[in-house]
Length: 129
Image (cartoon, rainbow, N blue to C red; front, side):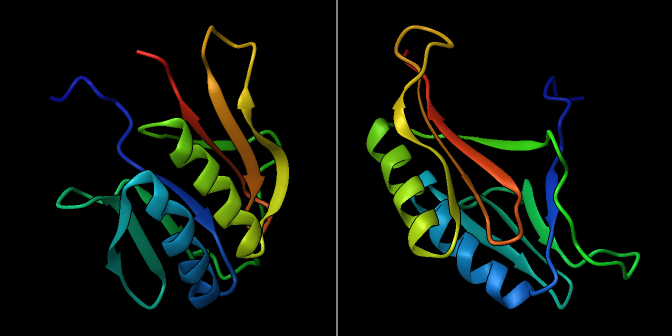
C-alpha cells in the first residue's frame, strides 16, 4: 500500500458545466488538468496521472453546499503559479479570501486563498525547499 493515505477530495456543484469551466482555468497554473468527465462529475490531477480532485453533482440529489471550516489546498511549483491561480480564480467568478503573499506559518511560505462560485474555500501555496 502507498504511504500516502489520501486518495481524493471532492466538492459539490449544482452546475457542473460552470464548475468545469472554473476549475479548468483555476487548476491549470498548478499543472493540473481535467482527466475524467461524466454527466455528474469531473476529475482533475497531474497530466498523465490519476484524478485526485473532483467536482460533482451531489449523489443524494440535494443542493450542493460548502463545508464551514473545510479548505482544499493545492501545492504550486513556484510563487508565480500561486499568483496565477488566485488571479484566474477571481477572473472566473471566485471570491478573494486572501491574496498572494508570504504567510507566517513557516519561513518563506507563500500562499493565496479564494472561494469558488459555490463557496468552497481553495488555497494554493508554494513551500520553500
